[in-house]
Image 1 (cartoon, rainbow, N blue to C red):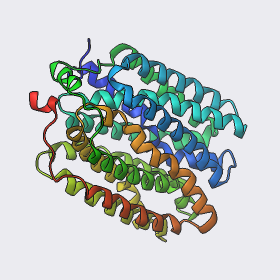
Image 2 (cartoon, helix red, strand yellow):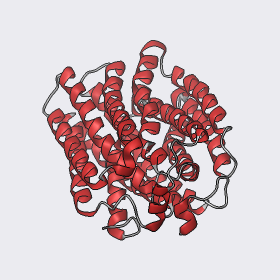
Image 3 (cartoon, rainbow, N blue to C red):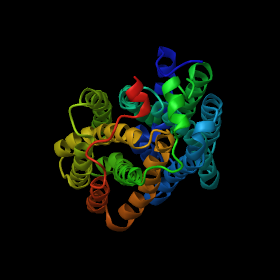
Length: 386
């Protein structure tokens, strides 16, 4: 059995994480393409992205409690393969109802694959470090995707975006079929399984809700990052440059989180993350000039990646069974699923500035949740054995 400590196992988890978390990279281009190329209003475009994310949430909520007895490799392989098929069909359609069904189906499939991916990472010897590694791979993916997709969509039409999504999912399916590691990486994981509690720690739920709030702000703001720049006249070339810079910046937060794992308090990072995120959202949605917009936009996603890496490590200590971490897509995408439709509704009704104000309110809730977390948690069974 391929293990999470092997190069092939880690490579599979990196590819699966990038494919399953494609929304974290692609939302500005996704929503922007639906508005520009498909002539949907912000609310309709946000709804389609929301349906994908809602499907992922449903898959994660279904699989997470059963993660310990779920065959991870087949679920990951079949999930990404079905998502590839759904996006390939979406590329051939402009009917809103069909696009809605295909977005939901792709979300269900990719969400199932991502759920077993994160559960497998959570059962590894060093969950914080391995999650940081897959986070770095997402930064590399972001550079390639955000640097190439907007010009291709502008040149060949909106369907190009869905062709790109289908390609990403197909590659992930092939890699998972060949290299996806076993969900239990050795004796430590077996010990964790035998000691699995009947219920997750109540404290862990505060972390889950807090991360969900950050995901809501992330998706709500990120969905309209490209649109707000275009509507303010910054131009396609300048905004594409910002998106590429965002991808470059995203190479560093996960690596930095890995280096600071034992130096910084996870709770302190979690308390600061929502505040910084809300401040950046205010700048992005209210900046009248390009420079402040560009700086805030370039580092915006990095805040979520850095903060969530610490949150992932802390949750692995609060719940050694792996179930809380198998629910990572749900905790991220409950918020992310609401983000595009909530953001689209606010923009349609009250303009871009309302997104900044909403981010401040939601950040307050997130900080309140993170205040309930312990300042330190005991190492997981896996980490103690390692």
